[in-house]
Image 1 (cartoon, rainbow, N blue to C red):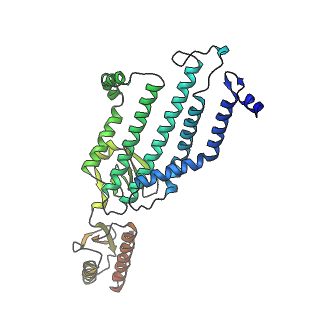
Image 2 (tube, one colour):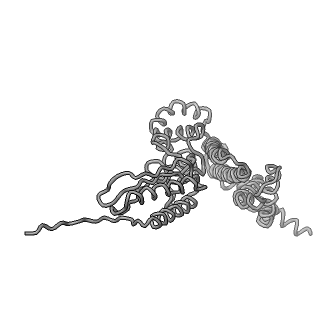
Image 3 (cartoon, rainbow, N blue to C red):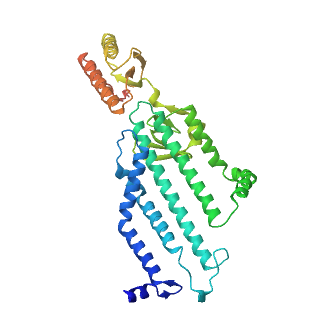
Amino acid sequence: MGELEQYISKIVLGNSVGDYLIVIGALGATALFNAFLSHRISDLLFKLITKHNTSLDKDTLYKLISKPLRNIITLLVLFACTSHLEYPESWDMAPKSEFGLSLVLHRVYLGVLILSFTWASLKFSEFLGLLLMSKAELTESKSDDQIIPFLIEILKILVVTFGIFFLMGAVFKVDIGALIAGLGIGGLALALAAKESLENLLASFVIFFDKPFVIGDLVQVNGIVGTVEKIGFRSTRIRTLEKSYLTLPNRQMIDNTLDNLSMRTFRRVSFNIGVEYGTTEQQLKAIVTEIQKYIDEHPNTNQDGEIHFMEFGSSSLDIMVLYYIDTMDWSIFLRIKEEINFEIMRIVKDNNAEFAFPTQTIHLAKS
């Protein structure tokens, strides 16, 4: 037992063997139980912020913050174990208060720790966004679906900003107060350099407060038609009818004429049909009357339908067909329009008339 105590108390490179064994044991235990500890911490955080029922489970939070939590735990244990270790006197190491290897290692450690906390905070912000969106889905209003991603982006920017300030203050010993004061002087130059970004940022606030559209609306802007999927600080993401993912700067969304198609109560249908010139007046009147009657009585059209014999075309007698379908769903709209088209074909056929196609009559003069 005496020999073991002598071996443990033996000094190697300025520290006892026992000190090294404590460090190795603590780091080994951390490696073994790190996943368990991070899981327990994420469970505790989950219980603190999810006091009401939610569709998210604990594993969602754990998957997001497990890696940064493990890094933080490892760094804290490493600091606790190595803080009391001494460098050998023969190395003549400068103290942490003076420039040297000891100071560099200490600053690097602080930098990695701050970055890990920032990383964990960003992941936690993502979980807050998922949690709030899961609750927003239970409401009929689309405004909360729009404001939540906006607020989460603000929170992420604040997290990164504070992380940078802490990093500069703790690692590079920058006077944060003087830096913030200096930002007021350099703010004008920064605003001029980032003029376009600031315009898009202000436009995002206009979109948020004025609400010309919300997430899920079908809009048309700059000749582009699509569904709004995300409204961010700088840009708006639109899923087009071709299923491509389009990004438009927010400034363009408010500076250009924007048609919110979701706000329409009806979809307009307008086209002409042409029947042959051999069609009699009675046939033409019957076709117009029957189509008008069918449009007026259709359960998915309003009473503003207009069917009229419009003009004498170059190769046909043209009938104008104008009506409105009471749906915003594109698939339902196409189905109803097709149904009406088939009925128009039937009406023309039942009146013994024929659709016209471009023709020319050539008269040959006898020589």
